[in-house]
Length: 339
Image (tube, rainbow, N blue to C red; front, side, top):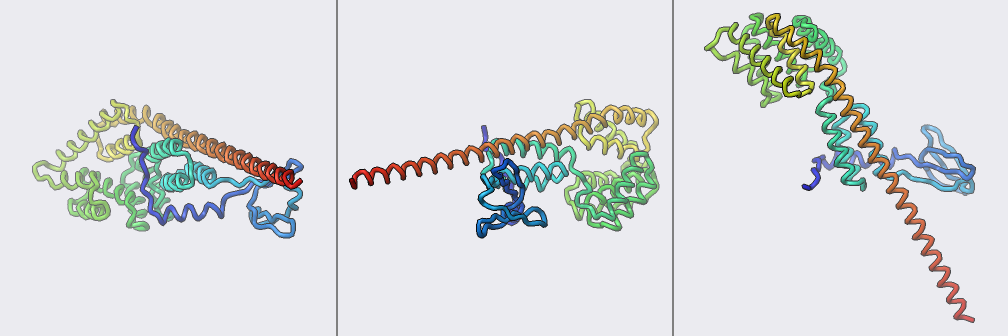
């Protein structure tokens, strides 16, 4: 078995995650009457223990406390990963895995958790994560219209989104895809398409779609109608191949949406509708399954870390008891020699 993959995280980012651990980690205060208080021990004075609970502070007599259980850094961070994953914050969850590793979480458990996070991120990463809120509304409206083959209305909404968030790569990719569709339909001059694609290549020099749009549009050997037919056939074959191979990825739905905007014939539209009806629920189920897998892996990691913490506390208690007994016996032996 190879060495588990390590995720490269900037030291500053790791330091920020670790710095927040002590401030946010909770303590469990077990009282002698069986009650439990969950908070943060803020200090001790005059036989009283100050416990911070949200914005309030509670004072409890030390004589009433049976024990205080401090959550380990590893347990706290693993629970933090669970929370981040539940909100689809995959990149931050993966960064927190590094902090959990530094805090002593089990390496094999973390390797499984990372794999689950990467899988879930690939399937369900939200392209709107880094989008300005005011642009997101127009983006979502545009995608809704695009799903219903309302290209002109979708383009107007996406243009609004681009104006509000001009540096957002996802928005610019959608603008370029729509401009290419307009070009193929004869509704946009090549110069306008080139302008949009050059903007996209400035932000993403290796974007494969942008390069393909430009190469096909600048190919003078074919008429515009031939270019449209070629683009339709190429993308249609790509969709059929992915469908036939069972590649149930969100990209397949994106390709179906894009092909509709090229105005294929009725036979291809019917086939696209059939494929989409079959794969959409499967892709959505796959995404949910991946997200559930993250939670299962995180739960296992938390349980293992909690058990390790309990075992360490027991060992420390046994060690302290042994040391105390050893000291007692030594003192007893000295007294015996003194007689």
